[in-house]
Length: 149
Image 1: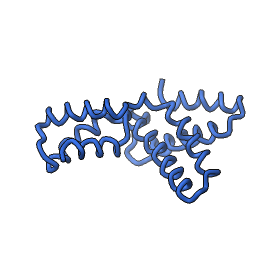
Image 2: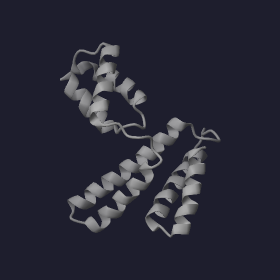
Image 3: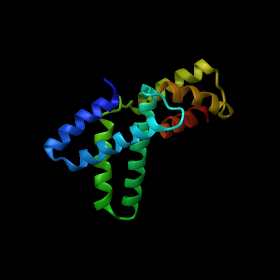
Image 4: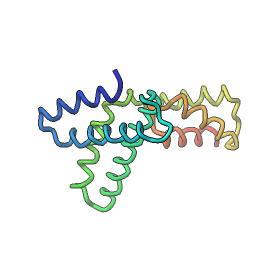
């Protein structure tokens, strides 16, 4: 089942339940999918990899917004953003723990043959492809830096 179908089903359920947070989140996903499909050179259907990137982008936007609101003492605005993150994350695969990411990155470093911080680009390229959708890029970057330093 495609992401768009799953979102539409969830949208119907949210409407029936009158869940405004879920509705807002699901409409944002639907809108992003439609925008991605109508971009120049886009295929009729999004690849799973593109869907994951799209969802991660939406989650990142909301987390960044929530962090800004919290920093400014506006928890009344931060809480709905975090609630939307929870709804959107339901469509992402299970996120890896930091220990699992560290193990994966260690394997990638051995595979690539990286020895110093100069090799960070090589490692990041492989790691972001292998771990796409399973963890945040910032987490991968931090772990790669710590292991190559």
